[in-house]
View 1 (cartoon, one colour):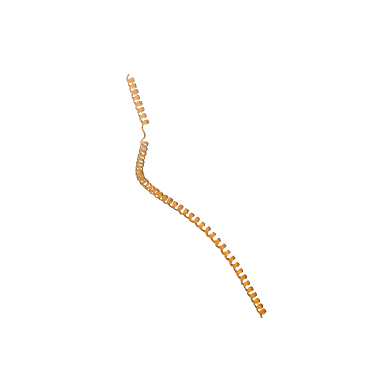
View 2 (cartoon, helix red, strand yellow):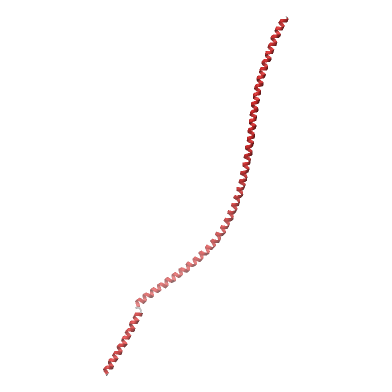
Length: 176
């Protein structure tokens, strides 16, 4: 029996060793070797550092964004003010242009009336000039007729005077 007890003990020891080996194998499966662990830790530290840098960059960018948004808000308000000022100025210019356009139209109408009046006066003046020309022509014709009549009358007077002289000399000769 001693040998059977020894066999049993050996068997128990083998079972315990197998259980320990199984446990070690399970632990090996669930564990990572030191080099892999150190590499993973370094990678994690690097990622944490990059995350911190990214977070810092995000904070700086957010601050810049808030500043830019503030500037955009200020510029938007200024742009709105300038837009209103421009629209007001444009409205004033439009109103002024409209008034000037109306005034221009009035002046054009007045000029048209004046031109029409001038044309009528020129027509009247032209008619008067034609009448004057006709009267000049009539006066000149009458002058020529009167000159001709005066010339004929002078000739007739000279003839009568000549005849009277000739008859007068004959009568004197006949009375003598």
